[in-house]
Amino acid sequence: MIGRRKLEHEEGEKDHTLDLRETDLRGAYLRDARLEGANLWSARLEGANLMGARLERADLRYTRLERTTLVEARLEEAHLRGARLEGAHFEVARLEGGNLVRARLERADLQGAGLEGAHLEGADLRYAINLTRDQVESAHCYTKKQLPEDLRNLADLEDRPHDVDESHQTEAEA
Image (cartoon, rainbow, N blue to C red; front, side, top):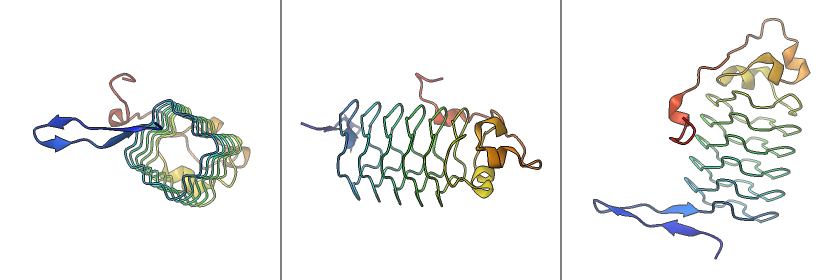
């Protein structure tokens, strides 16, 4: 069994959360997969193809996504805290409102990725590829020292440090 749907009945409601915690999905072909709200905490997805996948509000904390294809993926409000995203392809991906706190994005390609409202506290973007000023300015919480050198050297780009939105933390993280 790869994963299971949690079915809890509370006041007649069903929870269909797909539970893939700590699952090994390295190299998996998951193009256009519907994983909205899925629990992928600490899963292994290195080299997987998630092109066009729907991962809105998914729990991807501490997930291994190195060299993963996330082109045109929908990751709005996804929790990517501490995720390993080195060399991932996020071209035109939607990361608006996502939690990328302490995520590692070395050599990740962010060309055209939507970062509006994304939380970047402590995220390592120093060697990110195709990150633009507009993307950075649309995000929350960054300091120039975590940005690529070409953006770090812009005199009029101001730091936006630590206004952590508590709604992006679980009880265990708070």
